[in-house]
Image (cartoon, rainbow, N blue to C red; front, side, top):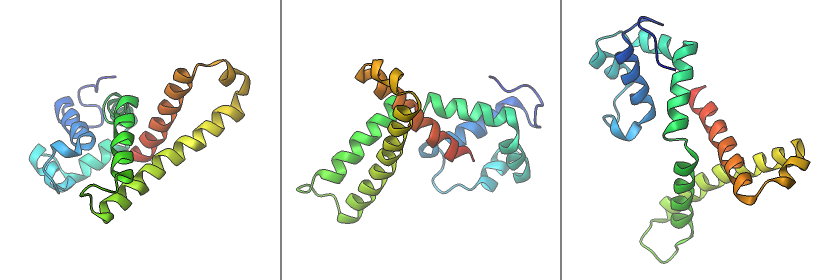
Length: 153
């Protein structure tokens, strides 16, 4: 749902740029603060805080996250990379990086395990009728939603 002119203050393109800044951390200036980004946009830092609390802005932010960094295929790729880093003992990965990868992998897969239980407990009959691929897609969707809720709260 596109942002409407003047909704929550600011021009729609300014609000879109802020959503991009929030979603794509690797594309923003490393370490750039929200205050610095507000200055770049030519708005007060409190305006950005106000936007983040705005219902429509939050909906657009969540939708952008779901379409990009929290898409099931992106999460699956991240899990594969974390798993590779966590399990390849013979490579040059530092122990601290391996431990960080294991921790992240366990957080994500722990959320997946909790979701699996929720699916089975909530709709056992429906889950039994689903293919493995459909169950995995549902699981990835629910994990992405949890991550999305955590990212925007």
